[in-house]
Structures are given as C-alpha cells and as structure tokens.
Length: 78
Image (cartoon, rainbow, N blue to C red; front, side):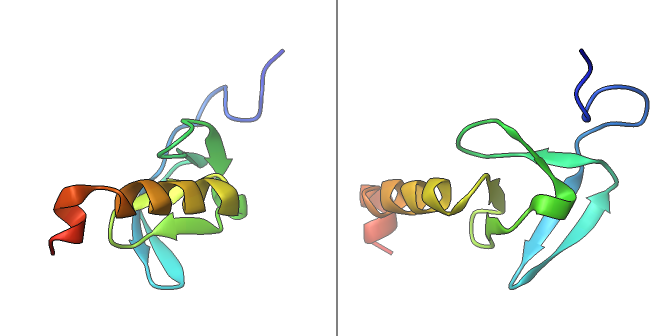
C-alpha cells in the first residue's frame, strides 16, 4: 500500500522556519519531525523552533525537545 508521501514528486521539503510562519526553500510534500523522524505534511505543520530550525510532529514533541535543550549544560551558560 502506498502512502501519500510515496510516488512521483513526493519528496521532503526544505524549510526556513520563521516567527509564526515558514518559507519553503526547496519544494516538497512534507518535512520530517526532528525528534521522531515521522513525516509531517506541510499543510499540517504547526510546531517548529526558529532557534533550532527544526519541525515537530505536535506540541508534546515540541515541549519534549525544549525540555531536553534546557538540560543541555552548554545552552544554560549562554
């Protein structure tokens, strides 16, 4: 069974994440969650980090990444 990300033309987009919006750098149908690796259709993309320039599957995954980053000793010294 083919999912909606397979087939001709279905490829991963390259995105620049901005405050409240994002800019498509290289066209595609989806991006991959930086934490889970799951595909996120561009029309469903709602969560990302401008500072880390990475997308997240949902709010829970975004929070998890934020908490992990706060525990990073190098980040706390900034």
